[in-house]
Image (cartoon, rainbow, N blue to C red; front, side, top):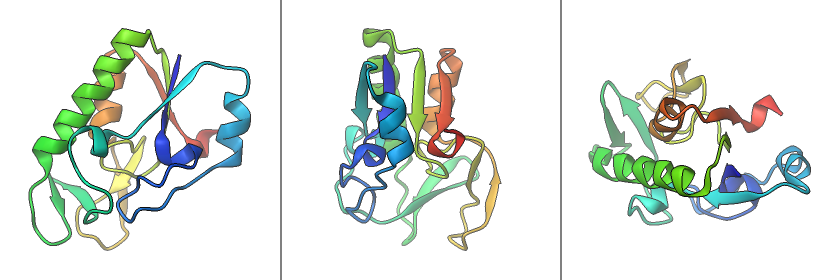
Length: 137
């Protein structure tokens, strides 16, 4: 089973209500078992919602609201799905505070990237799930 960020397969669940449908992801998934996930929605956040970034050990929206609890809940739910389905692979949206893999925004909302993983990626990696972004395909 492969867990996939819902936005990458065409679901409008991003913070601004859009998707990031990626043909390379859809082609990779052909003939495989996969399940779409959106950690932010699974954690209780609405769509659309304010953009959020990791700032030190908290996840804050652009307007200063702490949404760490929702992001943690979403990461926990995705990890639970990974356990229930036996998922050993995930393709998650790059740069996201949930799904980002290898690079995330620095928390200043300036577009600056730093090395790091989003909360869901961290949770899945702890479970030895192979996590990649759409950029790795």
